[in-house]
Amino acid sequence: MKPDEKTVKLFENDRFATENGAMIEEVEEHYAQCSLKLGSRHRNAMGAVMGGVYFTLADFAFAVAANWQGTGTVSLHSDIAYLGSAKGNQLIAEAVCIKNGRSTSYYKIEVKDELGNLTAVVNTTGYRVK
Image 1: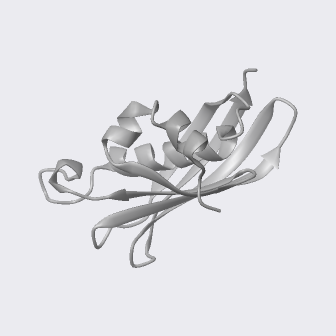
Image 2 (image 1 turned 180 degrees about the vertical axis):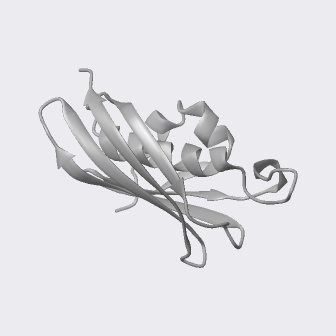
């Protein structure tokens, strides 16, 4: 479902991601889809998308999926595998909770370009601080 105004407002405080263009597209329990329109500021000296852009979007999708209902989960550990260069002008990240325990959770985040090409996969262990 589309995020409500309260959710959008909450994650506007994630300023690094949002000021770099990250937006919430869909959110459900333990799931989020976020996107980012690519511009020249997202590219490296060779014209490819910077690795940090993929990770920022994936981390933002994790944060939204894990916290949109106010649970207070932070990333304990993340690893990323870069699988290919993005084509087109947009990245889309989908965060899915694989396991949700009492204090830790595990999310898989896939980052694709607008053409559906898988560009990166991030595995994140979350820790509930509240």
